Structures are given as C-alpha cells and as structure tokens.
Image 1 (cartoon, rainbow, N blue to C red):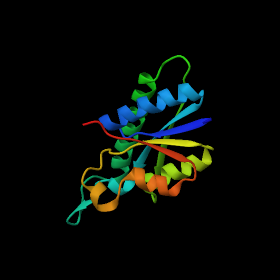
Image 2 (tube, helix red, strand yellow; image 1 turned 30 degrees about the vertical axis):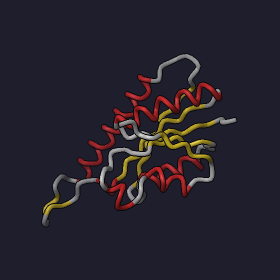
Image 3 (cartoon, helix red, strand yellow; image 1 turned 45 degrees about the vertical axis):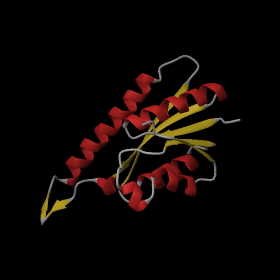
Image 4 (cartoon, rainbow, N blue to C red; image 1 turned 120 degrees about the horizontal axis):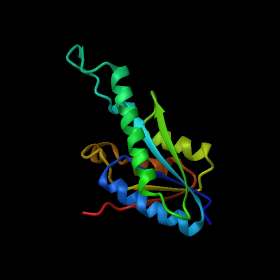
Length: 150
C-alpha cells in the first residue's frame, strides 16, 4: 500500500516514539523509510537589544551539526533487517519546518508522512498550531500522527 514513508523527527523523546512507529510501518509495507529532520532557521537565536547573540553563520553550523547527529542516532537505532532507510537533513533560510517537510514529500514521491503530535516547540504549539497540523494541511498524501506518550 505504501512505498515511501517519510518520518519527521526533531530529537525529542516524542519523536523517538514516532520513529519506532514509522519503522514498523515501513517494515510491514516493505516501504522505504525516509527519516527527515528540518532545521527551522526561524528559531535561531537572533539578537538581544542591538547585539547579535551569536553570529548567524556559527549558529547555523551548530544547528546543522545537531541535525546531523539526530539523523545519525536515528540511523543507528533503526539498524535492523528488513528496513530500507534514507536520511534527509532539510534546511532553508526562508521556510519553516512544515514547509520544508511538505516540499520533501513532493520531491521524494512520499505516500505517507508519519509525524509526532508534540515535539520541541512547547507553548508555541498552542499559539501558532502544531507542525503536524500544518504538514497535514499542506500535503496531498496520508498523514499518520503519533500521539505523544505521557
């Protein structure tokens, strides 16, 4: 039924649970699992007063290294027979994580997105709406939302 499944992770415990659900779905459907991590530059620390907190180039380098580490950890956790796996680090200076994920879905011919109901964004979820909700509104394929365990 599904040939390509994209799972969006952010390194949180909730996304670790989501990753496991997506891996089992990929094995069940003999699908390629694309593990994606989006760098949302809108969350980069910018300025305090008139001074830059940290040079943007340095902040981007740190965030990219952290994103690569999140993907490497996911790849290590998912090293199991019967699972075909790719990782994808998404980055853009102009797009939020949900836009990056939506574009990756189209670019990779994904037919199922697996995403957690909660991630690292905390209170921002209540103000702006969750990344999961925005992704579901933007993609034309099915979206499976994994509820965070409390």
